[in-house]
Length: 307
Image (cartoon, rainbow, N blue to C red; front, side):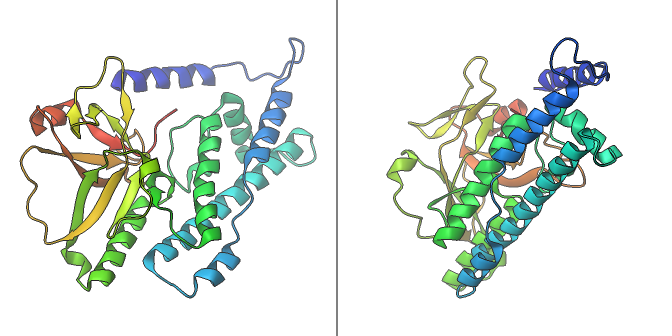
């Protein structure tokens, strides 16, 4: 993994060393290419979610999860407004209608290189290239838009689609604490990896939430025996089945044969920009190997990949 990161850094450096001159002699100029790419991104950005309308609908039920939904809608709407405004400014700048500021120059270069402009990463961290980041953004907004329209939380949550997953998990604990009339301080997580496909999960759990879309790095997953196994050759990550995050009261110490897998927001486990990457520790059955084995492997769960 470290070698892959070093290789990516080298390629980023090589991209930065490209000639910064505009030439249409050999075909499409840099400006024309960026204009096309920017227009394509603009078309893909979804419409804003109706925050005011959703707030009125949810006002009858101000539960913790609905509060999280409204906060997430606000953040994504702000992000999409920022992207649209900057893309419009960039088009005008290229056409000479407005002055190309340093920020617009940076966005121009990022789009040309296929990287996400840093100002667009303030809402949530990501290591994806621009094309897959845009598709990922569309999927994130779709989850929230569907939830907002139906006014009912999804049966299976895509936790990776939240800007602040820790806030979402806290809301789940708060909901459980209110339902069971206990203190939230006494609650912790119990994890159960599902052995059936998502299509067979027809309703939400009685307590807690179903979480999908997590990736396992540094190990493989035996679906039949529901435990960790060695990763297949050349397999860096594998998709995890849906996991039931269940709040439990006064949980005892973890049973033997369990590995505490840290879950990170993205592959940069150290985090960045003053924001931690670590989200939560998920207990997984360690299988035939001891937990120490997976610790040395650096086995962890990731909510987002870098491609």
